Length: 257
Image (cartoon, rainbow, N blue to C red; front, side, top):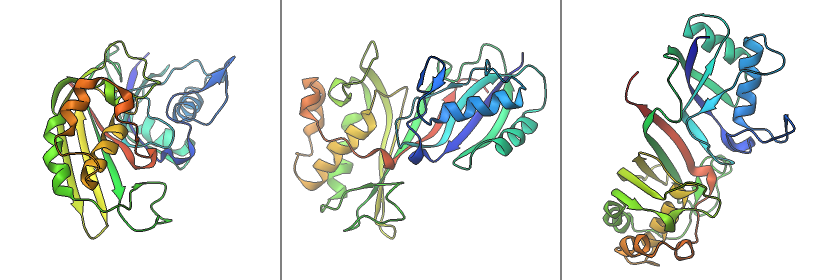
């Protein structure tokens, strides 16, 4: 069976995250993976839904994606572009297949990746904008972006990010490597946009990091707070988690195409 890789975009507002939530084989809540499984199996003419869809990242409830990557095997060999068009006619409007190509049978959307890039949008308007509320985190307190920019380099490198992992984290190690941590100030849009890239991220890690950085921006924490937080390895030291609505999985990178 040929293996296909697809790049997927979705508005996560009305999904209980990416990963399917099922009991006795019945999906309990609407998820991105659940909708993709239905569409792939309909295309594969498999009514019992035996074709699996594997994602690169288990984005949480309300989190969005521009570049989620999935893989699946189909019982026939057709061009990737035909698969893309076919799936997009089946899927709901809050999911879009951006690209599909055939890959080797040993490709795995999750385990073959070597880095992931996320961005986080913060609206700094006085009040919640009804047209942004599902797509940004809102933070109306006065911020000094320069304080945040000074603190960002302290996140770079291979470190134990236990302080920045939510209680539902189930990984065997909390050591992760961050290679990029940037902030862009969009004055016209009244937004801050954080970009983070690394080999992998812990459960809610980016949202907790953003929370700490916003507190640094207000002066509630010192600019050099992050090294001490990392050394503490204590989730209680960083309790504020930025809202899910502002987080986007932007790109997943692989060693080979």
